Length: 334
Ligand code: BTN
View 1 (cartoon, rainbow, N blue to C red):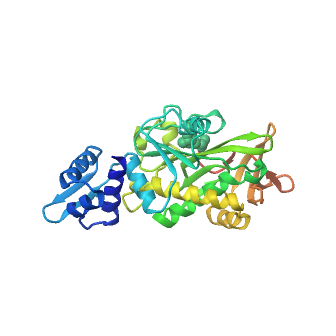
View 2: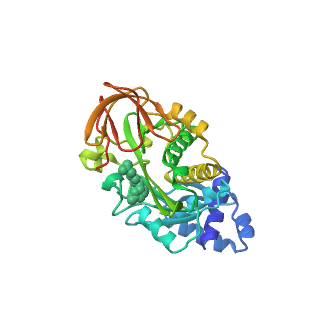
View 3: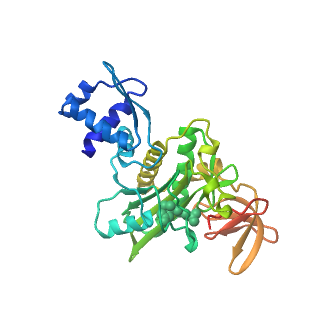
């Protein structure tokens, strides 16, 4: 039945505001018109608004707000993407589910996407606030079979590509805050968490997790998290469709990953960095060892290290860790 629903959704989506005839759908699917009607009733139960007009057919007037696997699959099929999609209404953590699927020898690339996480994980052991309304929680699992140093800019690369794609598709001005936050108008809109398992000198598998606030109701969030967060919808003129955003995200990450596998595209990475770098020339505080330093961000090294001009010495390269802006709100999802 899933394939039938996906076919119907693809027909409705690709006809946009036009009606799709019930007869035509029935013929394409090899089922009766009553059969088509029954499937549409099921879709209506899943919060699709589908108009029906006698002698004209059916038209999709509203999509569900929450993550819907069939709808995402329909969008992905229309974009020619053939990933293995695992859509679940609630999970502990999409990264953990992806890990278990890899251990189960599932085929890659695969994506786990969910409406809600009960144990969403952030960097450095933090919790990722993952309520069930308006967020996308997604993890991508790959088996790159490359030496780990070859993958050292992967998170930055994927983050920059996400910024670029959301800018191209929705006109949203996202920026990467090194190393793995996405910002919009000075607030955090997404976080990325990459986890890898390394065998001898090869990366056996790699999981890239991303949590994105699409149209979350921040008034329901804990104050400390809401104070530093924003959503895509807050900055968009058009009403965003969560499942469309999810499909754009999936397609972007998978294509960018495939390209990165062939070549790390250093020049493109540095160009994207120029375009989508949140920290450019800004005064920051950073930690080295146990010491805290002040400096100004002056660039990115080819291996993804942040180049900083400290107040008291020569330019230094920060390979990992976190930095905070001296003049801004603190930006963590605690
Ligand atoms: C951070 O900013 O600390 C990184 C947050 C990463 C959150 C995402 S949500 C999807 C995936 N599953 C998780 O448990 N974490 C990542």
